[in-house]
Length: 223
Image 1 (tube, helix red, strand yellow):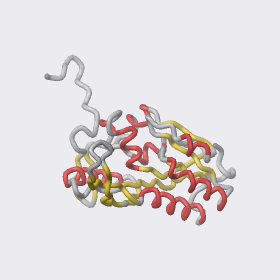
Image 2 (image 1 turned 90 degrees about the horizontal axis):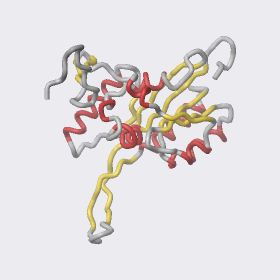
Image 3 (image 1 turned 30 degrees about the horizontal axis):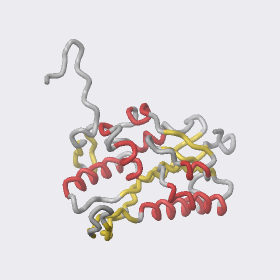
Image 4 (image 1 turned 180 degrees about the horizontal axis):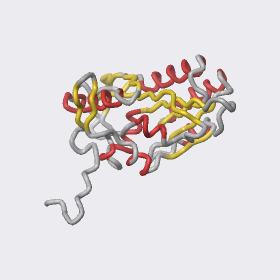
C-alpha cells in the first residue's frame, strides 16, 4: 500500500484481541510462541516501504483467581511494554451457568470488557486521526458492528483484519477493506528475547513459552 502522499508513510495502528489470539493460535498450536513480540509481529504484517506502525494495543485481562497464571501473564504484559505495546486490561466476572447434562447450576468466570475496550479505543483513534489504517487482530464476530460504525464516521480510514490461525473471521472480513492470515513464520520470527529489562528488573520468559534451543552440531539432546 502506497503512502498517502510522497512525503510520509501510511500510519498503521494495530488492535490485538489477546484472548482470541491465545485460544485460537498460541494455547495449543504454538505454545512455544507465547513469548510473542506483538510489535514485531505487527511489523511483519505491513509493507515497510510504504507503511509504518505507529501504535500497537494489546487487549486482555488477568485470571486473578489463578495466581500463578496471572503472574506469568503480568510478566508478559510488562515484557510487551518494553517494546512499546500498550496494554488495555478488562476483567473477569462470575456468571451463573446451567449444566446441560445434570441441569445443575454453577458459577464460571467470563471475560468482560475486551470487545468494548477495542471498540472505544478504535473509534477514539479514528475520530482523532491517529491512524490511516487500522489492523484488527481477532476472529471475534462481535467486533463487526464497530468496523461498520468506523466506516460511517471516518470513511477515509481503512480497516484490515488479521485472522488468527484456526479461525475464519468471516463476519469481520465482510466489513473490512482487506484481510491477512497469520502464518507460522510470522510467529516464529516475532519472539521476545528470553530476558528483558522492565523498570530496572530482569524479566525471564516462563518455561515453555519459547522454542527449545537447537542442539549444537554433532550433539543430541539428552532424554
